[in-house]
Length: 133
Image (cartoon, rainbow, N blue to C red; front, side, top):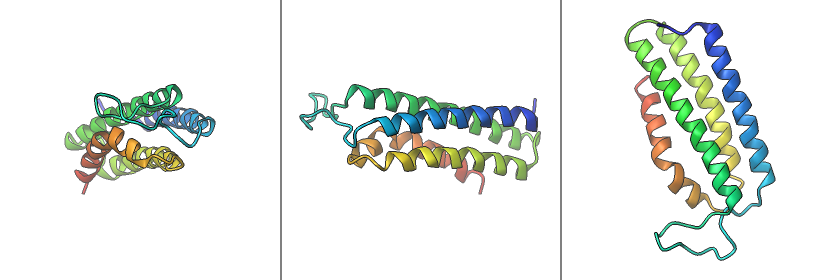
């Protein structure tokens, strides 16, 4: 079943609320995501502060939600349930929200940690968007 504009606006509103929550959490954090020791754990990954871990969980949940909606939009497009231009517009709306989140993460002095943590998920999201081309 195709998604109505009203249904999508509710989904978009949820994304906006979640984005604002994440942006508020980013503002509360120090500029450093790592623990004081700035060392790697035995597993080879960086040790994050508890707040950074919580923030990453929030961002991850938002990425996962965005991916579900984006894949569903692509499926509706392939089944021709929604016009292609509508799908493109909706995908761009979601991508714009996600970009704001990732732009806000740029404030931290550990871009390597952010890239390592979210790289696979960002690539999956980009793959869905590239399918639109």
